[in-house]
Each structure stands twice: as structure tokens, then as C-alpha cells.
Length: 211
Image (cartoon, rainbow, N blue to C red; front, side, top):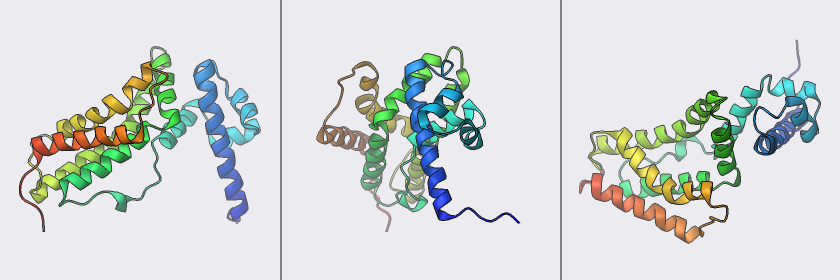
């Protein structure tokens, strides 16, 4: 019977995983996805090739881990807003989305995908499937709970979620893809989220409040 890994070994494995992901992110941006062999990533991360392959048997698996880590805020399911206060719920989700998009590595991740997309379209699918869509679905699901509670009136939750997140990303994220010095202040980001929330309230909010 194989003994379970000790806390020490689990911590070491987690540290090596982090080092691999950070090295791969940097090298993918510098040399491209296709131009970065796994052996070079292992060397940059300070781990053996065997260790890297044990954690990530393929480059595609490594890239998916990078995407997952980039979009992970390490929050539990109980952090999802409950229905009853549309303004508070949208504000929480909007601030969280702005935090995700404002992470230093997020723009770099998109640049990697855009640069490699003609040769590796699967990178776009990975970013969409494991990065953007889970968060999008959380917003769509939240809006549907507000609709069921009578605090929002909408006929198309997909369109409503796209409108809300689009208003935020158009200010917080997309200028960063073209302007290297784009770095809005926290107060400006909060204001952008607040304005998006007010627009959603005007379009979809009702006067009814759940008890």
C-alpha cells in the first residue's frame, strides 16, 4: 500500500508547480508557445524534466494550468452573491471581475493566445473554456437567480451577462492590450464598475425586493 504524501512533500510539489507555471508563462510570452520546449521550461523553473512531466505530461496541459491559475481567485462557492439585492450582487461580481482582469499576467496570457492563434487555435478554446466561461456562467447564473426572485427582469441572461462584463472589460482590460502604460487607478476602476452596475439596474432592475 502506497503511503499518502506528507505535508512537506505536498508543499514542495505545490512550490514546484508554481515555479513551472511562472517559468512557462514568462517563456511563452518571450519565445512563443511553439518556440518554448518543455525542457527549457524545466530548466528555467529549476526542476527536472521528470518532475515537469509528472505534473504536466503535455504542453497543452501546462497551458491549461496557466489559464486556470490566472482566472482563479481562490474563493469558495459560498462567495457567490445570493438574490435580493441586485446592486450589491452586481457590484461584488463586477469588482471581482475587474480584479481578475487587472492581474499583471492576464494581458500577457491573452497576448500569447492571440500571437499563436493561427497555428494553435486550441489555445483560444482553452482560454475561453477554462478561463472566461466559468466566470461568465457565474454571472449569468446569478442574474437568473435575481430574475427568479423578482429583483431583475430579463429574458436573455446570456446577453445581460455579456453586456455587464463587456462594460467592465472595455475599460479595465482591453486598453491594456494596446497601451503598455494603461494603468487606471483603483478609484477609476471602481467608478467603471459602479457605472456598469447603474446601467444594469436601469435596464433590468425592478422595484420588487426579495424578503
